[in-house]
Image (cartoon, rainbow, N blue to C red; front, side, top):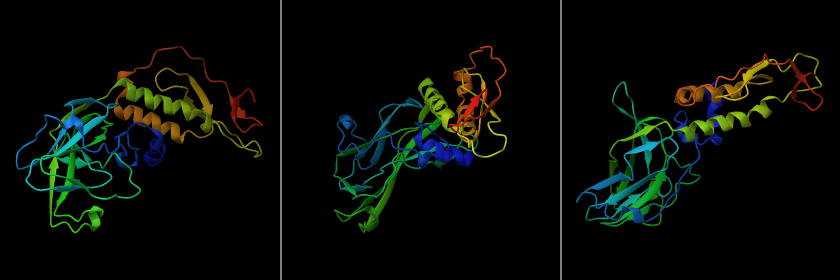
Length: 258
């Protein structure tokens, strides 16, 4: 079930379950004016975020400031990796970048005293931070893997707190409802019982109905529960009648009364 969700959540806004598979919500924003006043620490490369608390649907604006007396070089595509603190061990777990890169891109030079920014997002409640690896003495115009950097370093932002927000849950529910029609597809040319899988028409406020394949729907429902959306958006308490029996129509869809 979890594997099917990794595929399904390519179209989601969210996820803590498959961080690397999710599409980017923010891209490389270049030399970042929001870094004005963020001078960092002299002699150090620092990472800052625009806020210390976020909702799961919010964009994080990360900034790298070069407080050293020499240039540093950053990856050309995905600057930051996102790390989540394991509440049981207190250790940081790498959840990958928020950018899907077809190519790593040319390394980006950040001169002494300059800043560089990129947006990211944390789609699961918890304690997070942005981290990065950088190079020094790199060859200009080449990707990091070919830049023959003479040195390397790492930096991370202070920890930020991420809480579940309603917009995230609404996004999961919207994706669930959009998956209902595909789940009803069946084959009218085979002589066998179909459309026997019972699901809800909505994760928060729905009634039961029958579909042919519930696998993707179950993945969304599992993610809904994992995030805690059932607490933020509890069932609405509507009274539902038992679902009418469904069969496969000539159009190849599960339909009641057929």
